[in-house]
Length: 440
Image (cartoon, one colour):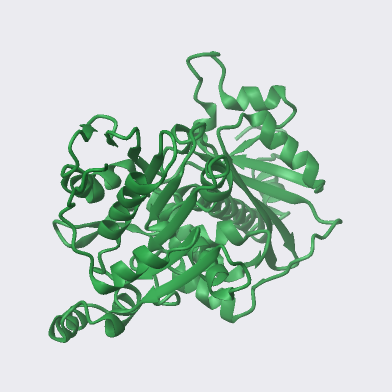
């Protein structure tokens, strides 16, 4: 006979309903203080204790491993600690249960550490802050061996991958998927007086996003959000054909274990057209050169940040030299401050057009690229937040500063032509010439 163990968790009615009615792929859009993290940990724990299988593996995944520890580790220890024989590995952030099951805390900031395992169930918390390719390239394959399940939970931050998954669950054409939205005005979990007080201290956009689950509210601290909204209103985000007679310049952000990103840009008349975008991680330069070849564009110049010249300890060569050996020559983008580069990007955005499909992921990264918020001082930092959006934004910044430098060079060239007087040399020569042959 099994032993009855009481876990110190009393789910709210909405949480209890979700425990009973979850599907294999469930998308939960929740207002702040809904209790989504507590629900997610207990859903994993319930499944680990009741599912009949050998060596159950469950995972709670946050955008950052540090964030997973701060948000969920204490909850996991509190609720799983009531189970006799449960043990906890603090350094690896995992809980081992006496039936052989294991629940792990993981971070989306290190996808290579996740590959290679299998998962019976996973909770992705704050999905809007995770890279889009994490699902298709890392998480989804881990669920195939054991018919595993996934819950996507979070608060909206624009029309991104989280929004797409929410729409997929709403469609109702796949019996494995479901979506639910929980607004603060509807759940009654937060007192109306507290909501009214919060509304006084927040902008309408902030309140709509955090408490009313709005996917269209502006992202707090975003550098390019309003400019891209204007581009959308001007219909500059649309399907853009490749002009085969115009050369394509590429602008790169170079990562090692991080993502490496490329923007593909053409100028047609006065329009700056972003016709394509590519991002991947964990691959060498030869992979990206093959990507360029497969796309088949007529290329012009390729621009990279200045750190491409740094020599690697292993080979003693810089990636600039490695790329040149593979047949790709880079130009070095101007090395100016990050905020100066962001300002250059803001200035040029009004002239930019983006292909809505091929640049979708890059565009979403630009929409969410934002300054870091200092919780203690309650102010925005003077530096951007480094997360999955940084790579696309850094490559876009390489475009902006390179374009600015080229425009400045062309301006000075035009000015020098405008100020040129063909008689200047003759006048100087006439002044110093002595018709009598005597030097003055």
